[in-house]
Image (tube, rainbow, N blue to C red; front, side, top):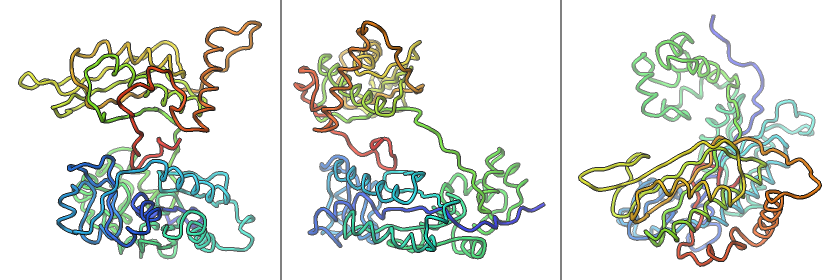
Length: 426
Protein backbone atom coordinates (compact mmCIF):
# COMPACT_ATOMS: atom_id res chain seq x y z
CA UNK A 1 0.00 0.00 0.00
CA UNK A 2 1.17 3.52 -0.80
CA UNK A 3 1.95 5.61 2.26
CA UNK A 4 -0.03 8.85 2.33
CA UNK A 5 1.62 12.23 2.83
CA UNK A 6 2.21 13.05 6.48
CA UNK A 7 -0.97 14.93 7.51
CA UNK A 8 0.75 16.78 10.39
CA UNK A 9 1.28 20.55 9.99
CA UNK A 10 4.79 21.81 9.12
CA UNK A 11 6.44 22.78 12.41
CA UNK A 12 10.17 22.40 11.79
CA UNK A 13 12.12 25.48 10.72
CA UNK A 14 15.44 25.53 8.87
CA UNK A 15 17.33 28.84 8.88
CA UNK A 16 20.17 29.33 6.40
CA UNK A 17 22.43 32.40 6.53
CA UNK A 18 22.87 33.50 2.91
CA UNK A 19 26.49 33.26 1.63
CA UNK A 20 27.49 33.34 5.27
CA UNK A 21 31.23 33.98 5.14
CA UNK A 22 31.20 36.46 2.26
CA UNK A 23 28.21 38.30 3.74
CA UNK A 24 29.93 38.49 7.13
CA UNK A 25 32.90 40.19 5.46
CA UNK A 26 30.54 42.57 3.65
CA UNK A 27 28.82 43.33 6.94
CA UNK A 28 32.18 44.14 8.54
CA UNK A 29 33.37 46.29 5.63
CA UNK A 30 30.72 48.49 3.97
CA UNK A 31 33.15 49.32 1.13
CA UNK A 32 32.78 45.81 -0.35
CA UNK A 33 29.00 45.57 -0.07
CA UNK A 34 27.18 44.90 -3.36
CA UNK A 35 30.53 43.87 -4.89
CA UNK A 36 31.60 40.36 -5.96
CA UNK A 37 33.48 38.94 -2.97
CA UNK A 38 35.29 35.66 -2.34
CA UNK A 39 36.68 34.21 0.86
CA UNK A 40 39.78 32.01 0.91
CA UNK A 41 41.65 30.33 3.73
CA UNK A 42 45.05 31.65 2.57
CA UNK A 43 45.42 34.75 0.46
CA UNK A 44 48.15 34.38 -2.15
CA UNK A 45 48.57 34.26 -5.94
CA UNK A 46 46.98 30.80 -6.04
CA UNK A 47 44.13 31.53 -3.63
CA UNK A 48 40.95 29.56 -4.29
CA UNK A 49 37.48 30.85 -3.42
CA UNK A 50 35.96 28.65 -0.73
CA UNK A 51 32.94 30.93 -0.31
CA UNK A 52 31.48 33.60 -2.61
CA UNK A 53 28.93 36.38 -2.33
CA UNK A 54 25.71 36.41 -4.32
CA UNK A 55 27.14 39.19 -6.47
CA UNK A 56 30.04 36.88 -7.38
CA UNK A 57 27.76 33.90 -8.04
CA UNK A 58 25.68 35.93 -10.49
CA UNK A 59 28.87 36.56 -12.50
CA UNK A 60 29.73 32.87 -12.65
CA UNK A 61 32.39 32.99 -9.94
CA UNK A 62 32.00 29.62 -8.28
CA UNK A 63 33.59 27.74 -5.39
CA UNK A 64 37.05 26.47 -6.26
CA UNK A 65 37.78 29.27 -8.74
CA UNK A 66 41.21 30.85 -8.48
CA UNK A 67 41.66 34.52 -7.67
CA UNK A 68 43.13 35.36 -11.09
CA UNK A 69 40.31 33.75 -13.04
CA UNK A 70 37.70 35.47 -10.85
CA UNK A 71 39.31 38.86 -11.51
CA UNK A 72 39.24 38.21 -15.25
CA UNK A 73 35.49 37.63 -14.98
CA UNK A 74 34.98 40.63 -12.70
CA UNK A 75 37.78 43.23 -12.39
CA UNK A 76 36.20 44.54 -9.18
CA UNK A 77 36.24 41.08 -7.57
CA UNK A 78 37.62 41.16 -4.02
CA UNK A 79 39.26 38.10 -2.43
CA UNK A 80 39.54 38.18 1.36
CA UNK A 81 41.37 35.85 3.73
CA UNK A 82 39.03 34.14 6.18
CA UNK A 83 38.79 35.70 9.64
CA UNK A 84 37.72 33.14 12.23
CA UNK A 85 36.75 35.56 15.05
CA UNK A 86 34.15 37.23 12.82
CA UNK A 87 32.47 33.92 12.00
CA UNK A 88 32.63 32.83 15.62
CA UNK A 89 30.81 36.01 16.60
CA UNK A 90 28.08 35.49 13.99
CA UNK A 91 27.71 31.83 14.94
CA UNK A 92 27.38 32.75 18.62
CA UNK A 93 24.74 35.41 17.94
CA UNK A 94 22.72 33.02 15.76
CA UNK A 95 22.76 30.46 18.57
CA UNK A 96 21.46 33.08 20.99
CA UNK A 97 18.59 33.98 18.67
CA UNK A 98 17.61 30.38 17.88
CA UNK A 99 17.98 29.31 21.50
CA UNK A 100 15.54 32.01 22.64
CA UNK A 101 12.75 30.13 20.82
CA UNK A 102 13.56 26.60 21.90
CA UNK A 103 16.25 24.98 24.07
CA UNK A 104 16.11 22.08 21.61
CA UNK A 105 17.40 24.09 18.64
CA UNK A 106 20.33 22.63 16.74
CA UNK A 107 23.04 24.15 14.56
CA UNK A 108 23.41 21.90 11.52
CA UNK A 109 26.47 23.70 10.22
CA UNK A 110 28.27 26.99 10.77
CA UNK A 111 25.54 28.92 8.94
CA UNK A 112 22.47 26.68 9.30
CA UNK A 113 20.19 26.00 12.24
CA UNK A 114 17.03 24.01 12.93
CA UNK A 115 14.26 24.81 15.41
CA UNK A 116 11.70 22.10 16.13
CA UNK A 117 8.38 23.67 17.17
CA UNK A 118 6.47 20.39 17.46
CA UNK A 119 4.50 20.36 20.69
CA UNK A 120 5.38 23.99 21.37
CA UNK A 121 2.31 25.79 20.04
CA UNK A 122 1.64 27.17 23.50
CA UNK A 123 4.75 29.35 23.51
CA UNK A 124 3.92 30.88 20.13
CA UNK A 125 1.14 32.97 21.73
CA UNK A 126 -1.16 32.68 18.75
CA UNK A 127 1.50 33.44 16.15
CA UNK A 128 2.10 31.18 13.17
CA UNK A 129 5.43 29.50 12.40
CA UNK A 130 5.72 31.90 9.45
CA UNK A 131 5.33 34.83 11.86
CA UNK A 132 8.23 33.46 13.87
CA UNK A 133 10.27 33.05 10.69
CA UNK A 134 9.75 36.69 9.74
CA UNK A 135 10.62 37.72 13.28
CA UNK A 136 13.88 35.74 13.16
CA UNK A 137 14.79 37.35 9.85
CA UNK A 138 14.38 40.79 11.38
CA UNK A 139 16.24 39.85 14.56
CA UNK A 140 19.23 38.70 12.50
CA UNK A 141 19.36 42.17 10.95
CA UNK A 142 18.90 43.91 14.29
CA UNK A 143 21.15 41.72 16.44
CA UNK A 144 23.78 40.37 14.02
CA UNK A 145 24.09 42.96 11.27
CA UNK A 146 21.92 45.13 9.04
CA UNK A 147 23.45 43.62 5.88
CA UNK A 148 22.82 40.04 6.98
CA UNK A 149 19.95 38.04 5.46
CA UNK A 150 18.68 34.52 6.07
CA UNK A 151 16.45 32.12 4.19
CA UNK A 152 13.80 30.38 6.27
CA UNK A 153 12.22 27.08 5.31
CA UNK A 154 9.36 25.40 7.17
CA UNK A 155 8.46 21.74 6.69
CA UNK A 156 7.16 18.57 8.33
CA UNK A 157 10.62 17.08 8.73
CA UNK A 158 14.16 18.43 8.81
CA UNK A 159 14.89 17.50 5.21
CA UNK A 160 11.78 19.20 3.81
CA UNK A 161 12.52 22.29 5.90
CA UNK A 162 15.98 22.39 4.30
CA UNK A 163 14.42 21.99 0.85
CA UNK A 164 12.04 24.88 1.59
CA UNK A 165 14.95 27.06 2.78
CA UNK A 166 16.42 26.79 -0.70
CA UNK A 167 13.55 28.70 -2.28
CA UNK A 168 13.63 32.43 -3.15
CA UNK A 169 17.27 33.00 -2.17
CA UNK A 170 18.48 35.33 -0.90
CA UNK A 171 16.29 36.50 1.98
CA UNK A 172 13.31 34.21 1.31
CA UNK A 173 10.73 32.40 3.42
CA UNK A 174 8.86 29.33 2.18
CA UNK A 175 6.61 26.75 3.84
CA UNK A 176 5.96 23.29 2.46
CA UNK A 177 3.22 21.02 3.80
CA UNK A 178 0.59 18.47 2.74
CA UNK A 179 -1.20 20.96 0.50
CA UNK A 180 1.74 22.02 -1.68
CA UNK A 181 4.20 19.14 -1.39
CA UNK A 182 3.64 17.71 -4.88
CA UNK A 183 3.58 21.18 -6.43
CA UNK A 184 6.96 21.89 -4.84
CA UNK A 185 8.51 18.70 -6.25
CA UNK A 186 7.19 19.66 -9.71
CA UNK A 187 9.33 22.85 -9.54
CA UNK A 188 12.62 21.16 -8.60
CA UNK A 189 15.24 19.22 -10.55
CA UNK A 190 16.55 16.07 -8.91
CA UNK A 191 19.90 17.61 -8.07
CA UNK A 192 18.20 20.57 -6.39
CA UNK A 193 17.09 18.17 -3.64
CA UNK A 194 19.52 18.03 -0.69
CA UNK A 195 21.85 15.00 -0.81
CA UNK A 196 20.91 14.09 -4.41
CA UNK A 197 24.05 14.67 -6.42
CA UNK A 198 25.42 13.12 -9.60
CA UNK A 199 25.85 9.59 -8.22
CA UNK A 200 22.36 9.33 -6.74
CA UNK A 201 20.87 10.98 -9.81
CA UNK A 202 22.38 8.24 -12.00
CA UNK A 203 20.97 5.58 -9.68
CA UNK A 204 17.52 7.12 -9.92
CA UNK A 205 17.76 7.51 -13.71
CA UNK A 206 18.63 3.83 -14.09
CA UNK A 207 15.34 3.00 -12.35
CA UNK A 208 13.38 5.30 -14.70
CA UNK A 209 13.19 8.19 -12.23
CA UNK A 210 14.09 11.46 -13.97
CA UNK A 211 12.33 14.20 -12.00
CA UNK A 212 11.71 15.09 -8.37
CA UNK A 213 8.04 14.30 -8.89
CA UNK A 214 8.99 10.84 -10.24
CA UNK A 215 11.12 10.39 -7.11
CA UNK A 216 8.22 11.30 -4.84
CA UNK A 217 5.82 8.95 -6.67
CA UNK A 218 8.22 6.00 -6.88
CA UNK A 219 7.05 2.87 -4.98
CA UNK A 220 8.97 2.01 -1.84
CA UNK A 221 10.08 -1.33 -3.26
CA UNK A 222 11.72 0.42 -6.23
CA UNK A 223 13.65 2.80 -3.99
CA UNK A 224 14.68 0.05 -1.60
CA UNK A 225 15.45 -2.79 -4.02
CA UNK A 226 16.49 -1.05 -7.26
CA UNK A 227 17.82 2.40 -6.46
CA UNK A 228 19.53 2.43 -3.06
CA UNK A 229 19.54 -1.34 -2.47
CA UNK A 230 19.44 -0.82 1.28
CA UNK A 231 17.33 0.52 4.13
CA UNK A 232 18.13 3.97 2.76
CA UNK A 233 15.43 3.43 0.15
CA UNK A 234 12.85 3.07 2.95
CA UNK A 235 14.17 6.22 4.63
CA UNK A 236 13.90 8.19 1.40
CA UNK A 237 10.34 6.93 0.88
CA UNK A 238 9.37 8.27 4.32
CA UNK A 239 11.38 11.49 4.00
CA UNK A 240 9.80 12.47 0.68
CA UNK A 241 6.35 12.19 2.29
CA UNK A 242 7.14 14.39 5.26
CA UNK A 243 8.04 11.80 7.93
CA UNK A 244 11.13 12.31 10.09
CA UNK A 245 14.02 9.91 9.55
CA UNK A 246 17.08 11.83 10.76
CA UNK A 247 18.98 10.56 13.78
CA UNK A 248 21.47 12.85 15.48
CA UNK A 249 24.83 11.48 16.57
CA UNK A 250 27.20 12.88 19.15
CA UNK A 251 30.81 13.91 18.64
CA UNK A 252 32.80 11.01 17.18
CA UNK A 253 36.15 12.62 16.42
CA UNK A 254 38.00 15.79 17.37
CA UNK A 255 40.76 17.04 15.12
CA UNK A 256 42.75 19.92 13.67
CA UNK A 257 44.36 20.42 10.25
CA UNK A 258 47.02 23.03 9.42
CA UNK A 259 48.94 24.07 6.33
CA UNK A 260 52.28 25.38 7.59
CA UNK A 261 53.26 28.95 6.82
CA UNK A 262 56.93 28.03 7.32
CA UNK A 263 57.68 24.53 6.12
CA UNK A 264 60.11 22.61 8.26
CA UNK A 265 62.02 19.37 8.68
CA UNK A 266 63.26 20.33 12.17
CA UNK A 267 62.11 17.61 14.61
CA UNK A 268 61.90 20.12 17.48
CA UNK A 269 59.68 22.46 15.47
CA UNK A 270 57.47 19.56 14.38
CA UNK A 271 57.20 18.43 17.99
CA UNK A 272 56.09 21.95 18.94
CA UNK A 273 53.44 21.89 16.20
CA UNK A 274 52.14 18.56 17.49
CA UNK A 275 51.87 20.02 20.98
CA UNK A 276 49.93 23.02 19.70
CA UNK A 277 47.48 20.79 17.85
CA UNK A 278 47.20 18.48 20.87
CA UNK A 279 46.43 21.44 23.15
CA UNK A 280 43.61 22.61 20.90
CA UNK A 281 42.11 19.12 20.64
CA UNK A 282 42.39 18.64 24.40
CA UNK A 283 40.61 21.92 25.00
CA UNK A 284 37.62 20.81 22.95
CA UNK A 285 37.55 17.36 24.55
CA UNK A 286 37.51 18.85 28.03
CA UNK A 287 34.88 21.44 27.07
CA UNK A 288 32.55 18.60 26.07
CA UNK A 289 33.61 16.31 28.95
CA UNK A 290 35.03 13.75 26.54
CA UNK A 291 38.14 11.63 26.24
CA UNK A 292 39.65 9.67 23.34
CA UNK A 293 41.40 6.31 23.01
CA UNK A 294 42.57 6.53 19.42
CA UNK A 295 44.89 8.98 17.68
CA UNK A 296 45.55 9.50 13.98
CA UNK A 297 48.20 11.74 12.37
CA UNK A 298 48.69 12.58 8.70
CA UNK A 299 51.66 14.52 7.29
CA UNK A 300 52.02 15.88 3.77
CA UNK A 301 55.44 16.88 2.51
CA UNK A 302 56.73 19.95 0.67
CA UNK A 303 57.23 19.80 -3.07
CA UNK A 304 54.84 16.90 -3.55
CA UNK A 305 51.11 16.32 -3.70
CA UNK A 306 49.31 14.42 -0.99
CA UNK A 307 47.73 11.34 -2.50
CA UNK A 308 45.44 9.34 -0.26
CA UNK A 309 46.02 8.96 3.43
CA UNK A 310 48.85 6.48 3.47
CA UNK A 311 52.54 6.37 2.59
CA UNK A 312 52.82 6.93 -1.16
CA UNK A 313 55.82 6.50 -3.43
CA UNK A 314 56.14 7.25 -7.13
CA UNK A 315 59.49 7.40 -8.93
CA UNK A 316 61.21 7.64 -5.59
CA UNK A 317 59.18 10.68 -4.44
CA UNK A 318 57.41 10.74 -1.10
CA UNK A 319 54.07 12.46 -0.80
CA UNK A 320 52.43 11.75 2.53
CA UNK A 321 52.48 9.52 5.57
CA UNK A 322 49.87 8.58 8.11
CA UNK A 323 49.78 6.55 11.29
CA UNK A 324 47.18 5.62 13.85
CA UNK A 325 46.92 3.70 17.08
CA UNK A 326 44.16 2.61 19.43
CA UNK A 327 45.31 2.76 23.07
CA UNK A 328 44.02 0.87 26.08
CA UNK A 329 43.05 4.00 28.00
CA UNK A 330 41.23 7.18 27.02
CA UNK A 331 42.86 10.57 27.62
CA UNK A 332 41.95 14.25 27.30
CA UNK A 333 44.93 16.26 28.52
CA UNK A 334 47.32 18.13 26.19
CA UNK A 335 50.42 16.34 27.45
CA UNK A 336 48.80 12.91 27.12
CA UNK A 337 47.68 13.55 23.53
CA UNK A 338 51.07 15.05 22.73
CA UNK A 339 53.03 11.99 23.87
CA UNK A 340 50.79 9.77 21.78
CA UNK A 341 51.28 12.05 18.77
CA UNK A 342 55.05 11.91 19.29
CA UNK A 343 54.85 8.12 19.52
CA UNK A 344 53.32 8.09 16.03
CA UNK A 345 55.68 10.80 14.70
CA UNK A 346 58.71 8.65 15.53
CA UNK A 347 57.39 6.10 13.01
CA UNK A 348 57.23 8.66 10.19
CA UNK A 349 59.99 8.84 7.55
CA UNK A 350 62.84 11.03 8.87
CA UNK A 351 64.22 14.13 7.18
CA UNK A 352 61.12 15.08 5.17
CA UNK A 353 60.03 18.72 4.99
CA UNK A 354 56.56 19.04 6.44
CA UNK A 355 53.96 21.04 4.47
CA UNK A 356 50.80 20.25 6.43
CA UNK A 357 49.65 18.31 9.45
CA UNK A 358 46.40 16.70 10.48
CA UNK A 359 45.85 15.17 13.91
CA UNK A 360 42.58 13.54 14.95
CA UNK A 361 41.47 11.96 18.21
CA UNK A 362 38.94 9.17 17.65
CA UNK A 363 37.11 6.50 19.64
CA UNK A 364 35.68 9.38 21.66
CA UNK A 365 33.73 8.57 24.82
CA UNK A 366 32.46 10.38 27.94
CA UNK A 367 35.30 11.20 30.31
CA UNK A 368 35.38 9.23 33.54
CA UNK A 369 35.10 11.19 36.76
CA UNK A 370 38.11 10.70 39.01
CA UNK A 371 37.28 9.23 42.39
CA UNK A 372 38.11 11.54 45.30
CA UNK A 373 41.20 10.54 47.25
CA UNK A 374 42.84 11.68 50.46
CA UNK A 375 45.95 12.78 48.56
CA UNK A 376 45.79 14.23 45.05
CA UNK A 377 47.57 12.13 42.44
CA UNK A 378 49.86 13.62 39.81
CA UNK A 379 47.13 13.14 37.21
CA UNK A 380 44.59 15.06 39.29
CA UNK A 381 47.06 17.92 39.78
CA UNK A 382 47.84 17.95 36.04
CA UNK A 383 44.11 18.04 35.25
CA UNK A 384 43.60 21.00 37.56
CA UNK A 385 46.52 22.86 36.00
CA UNK A 386 45.12 22.27 32.52
CA UNK A 387 41.67 23.47 33.63
CA UNK A 388 43.29 26.66 34.95
CA UNK A 389 45.19 27.20 31.69
CA UNK A 390 42.00 26.67 29.70
CA UNK A 391 40.20 29.23 31.86
CA UNK A 392 42.90 31.80 31.02
CA UNK A 393 42.79 30.91 27.31
CA UNK A 394 38.99 31.05 27.26
CA UNK A 395 39.18 34.63 28.46
CA UNK A 396 42.17 35.94 26.54
CA UNK A 397 42.34 33.74 23.44
CA UNK A 398 43.44 30.25 22.46
CA UNK A 399 47.10 29.43 23.22
CA UNK A 400 47.59 32.68 25.18
CA UNK A 401 49.05 30.61 28.01
CA UNK A 402 51.37 27.88 26.69
CA UNK A 403 54.76 26.34 27.49
CA UNK A 404 57.70 28.57 26.54
CA UNK A 405 58.85 26.18 23.80
CA UNK A 406 55.48 26.50 22.08
CA UNK A 407 55.46 30.31 22.13
CA UNK A 408 58.84 30.32 20.33
CA UNK A 409 57.49 28.37 17.34
CA UNK A 410 57.92 29.94 13.91
CA UNK A 411 54.55 28.58 12.78
CA UNK A 412 51.59 30.44 14.28
CA UNK A 413 49.19 27.66 13.21
CA UNK A 414 46.25 30.01 12.81
CA UNK A 415 42.88 28.31 12.90
CA UNK A 416 41.09 28.39 9.57
CA UNK A 417 37.38 27.80 9.25
CA UNK A 418 36.52 24.28 8.06
CA UNK A 419 33.67 25.42 5.81
CA UNK A 420 30.42 23.51 6.10
CA UNK A 421 31.11 22.00 9.52
CA UNK A 422 30.50 22.95 13.10
CA UNK A 423 33.58 21.33 14.59
CA UNK A 424 35.53 24.57 14.83
CA UNK A 425 32.79 26.16 16.95
CA UNK A 426 32.06 23.29 19.33
